[in-house]
Length: 101
Image (spheres, helix red, strand yellow):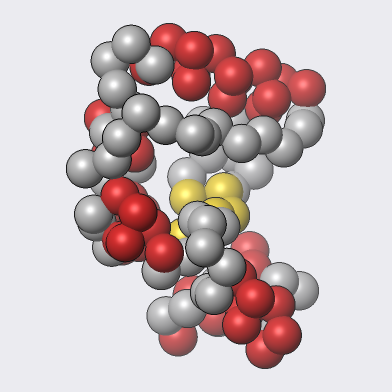
């Protein structure tokens, strides 16, 4: 996790060595989004680069990048799943996906 993110007050309570080690070594992408009406990712685990071809900073700098990587036939179901989960306040998994970058 980049050092500047460790000091982000929105991550207070999430950053401890054990959690960080777990998140950065499991073979999935772990992310933390803000709780804004239109949330932004404030943390993405390093695995995103291996799985989708772009470093975490690219998704933080361009929030629409992940969506542009969704297969066109999956775009609406993925968006609907995400919107429904967000409206209901539940977690969701948006994969498996057809492919990546």
